Length: 167
Image 1 (spheres, one colour):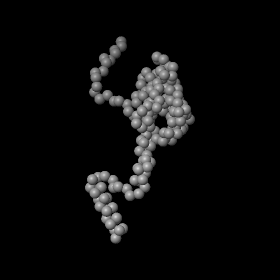
Image 2: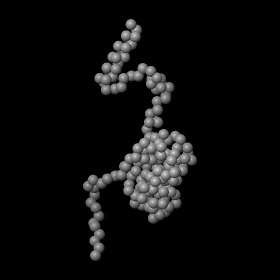
Image 3: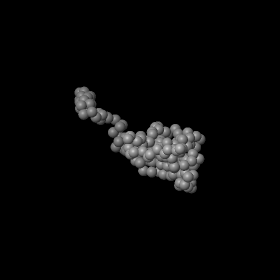
Image 4: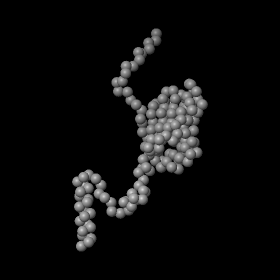
């Protein structure tokens, strides 16, 4: 009779949970994992590798899942000044520097999932992605779960500049 009472109470809880559109309570090790603190919600959220490449410079920022910055560098931080910041080579060195700093800090062991966020259409976009796909990015490449494009698009917007007429 005791087993019958447990089964009916479990069925009752499941039907109430379905009516409320919530998952039914688990009867097992899931509750224990939550009590002990083994719930891995932070592991399921990815780290972010932001690449902001515009016409004149490239920025790379690596953030934790809660959006705290781990490293944030640009081509100017590496010693490229003025017009030297906009070139492919400076962005390539920037990507290599950022990944090297992550390896030195031991972050490649902590990062289980990584989302690459691209923004802008400058030459640095291609350069930093080549670094991630090359031999220098091999430790982070396996943890990439998503590549997103966050480039801002102009719908209407302000009036464009007057076209220059030659001749």
